[in-house]
Length: 415
Picture (cartoon, rainbow, N blue to C red):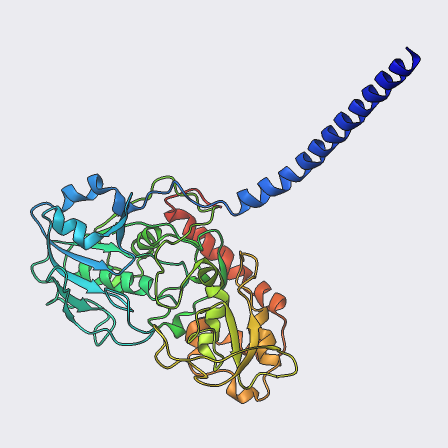
């Protein structure tokens, strides 16, 4: 029986060894889990957020028996199990008397280029007249508001000062205040709402790409921004608008927010939206920021950047949203940023790097840079050789002041 006992002991120890290895392997796997969970939490999306437009019970009663105008574009939708329905189609189906649509930059159906004038017209689907707010008129005239009882504003913003939808809101609220017409904002999450950064606009450089004294990234929803326009008396003459905000449900600005519909032709995905505050400053230069490609605001380059420094190349060509992109048909040397980790700041390093590696610095900045930056200081600082980090430190005092103002108008917990 000695051989049997020997065999039995051998099998027993072999079993213990296998069990120990298996247990160790499981424990090893468990040590990896916290890291994966952390990454998932960091990238967690506002999956349970309910936009204002979806809460029809809160605003339909406010529209009954009234002549309604709607400020809308392709993002103005009510989400449902099948996808979504456009707000205007929903209002018409609910017997709301929509008498006019006001269209912002890019138009009601969203096909116009950035900066391209949008024409008045008629919506083919509903027959409702469309009046452009991005052509000869950027503010609704008293005549265009005649007979209207209430204006509904529902546009997805991205939380960046030079993204012109907040300028449209400013003018709509101002015009309605002058005509004593109430405004209802159907709020939506801000995909860049988890930070505040960038230079604050100086009043001397006010334009349609920056109308109010706010940082480049303001960290507010468009409903919160409307409350601030009222509360700070930033509308013309300090006038205030009769404003109602239909707030989002379950919105957490600490979390990412995925936009199921691109907010404009040249912001095609979450990466472009996240990089837009940083790369949008290239709009004030002769450097191409991806327009004329399928990676808008996810790359930058120009034919006059140093070929020895930049190995990444691409050639901008006309496409939807960019009929004539900068550097059209030219080989651009620059950087591909499509794999860049999510930013929580305005990062100037690419702008500064491009300037210092420009073969002819007289070609770099153009007239529009100051209105995009909101200050003359930024161009001067770059030309003087200041680093991106040193420049960012100069914003702190203005940012702290703005954050104090901003806090008064927040409708959702801050980050």
